[in-house]
Image 1 (cartoon, rainbow, N blue to C red):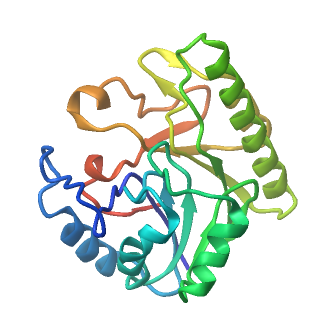
Image 2 (image 1 turned 135 degrees about the vertical axis):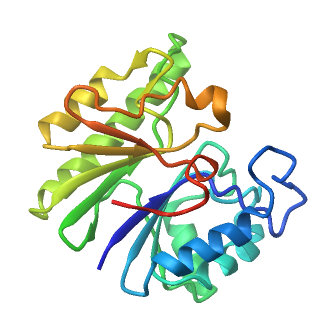
Length: 228
C-alpha cells in the first residue's frame, strides 16, 4: 500500500467554472485521470489537499465526487480556501454515505493511518497578515494541526503533514507551525494553494528548519499524484 498526495484539483464538472482559461490547465481532468490510473491502485491512499470542487453547495459536488469515486484508491480530503461547499464533518460524511462514496474520508481534526505513516494536517491560513481576524484564524488552524499531530502520535506511525496553505511563502515562515512539527518528529510537509510560475517562485520547496517542503498544487505537478 502506498500513499499519494495532490492538491488544488478545482473540479467543475457540475459547475460553469472552466479552468482551461488559465495556462497549463487545458484538458487537466483527463491528465489527472490518466496519471491517477497509471500510479494508484485500489489499495493505495490519495490525500487531496484542498480546493477540490468549485461547487458552492455540498449537494452540487456530486458530479465532481462521482469523477473521483471512479478512480482507484482511498481518498482523504482536506479543506481548501475555495471549498465553499464544505459543511460540518457529520453532514459531509452523511452525504458520502448516501451517495455510496465509501472510498472518501476527511482529514479534519484527526490523523489518518496509511501503512507505515500517519497523515496529519489542516487547511492553514495566510501567514503574512497582522490583521487580528487573520491571526485568530491562523491560531485556530495551528490548534487543529497540533491536535492532528497528537492523534498521529497515538498510532506509533511516522507523521507526515499535509496543509492547503504553504507554511513558508514570500519570505514569511509560520515559525509556530515549524516548531510544532519538529516537536512531533515531522520530516516532510506537503502544501498546495500556489498557482502559476510567478507565485511558485515565492513558495519555498526546499528544507526549512529541518523539514522538507513540497508544493503539490495540481498545475505545479502536472496533475500527477505524488508518492509520499
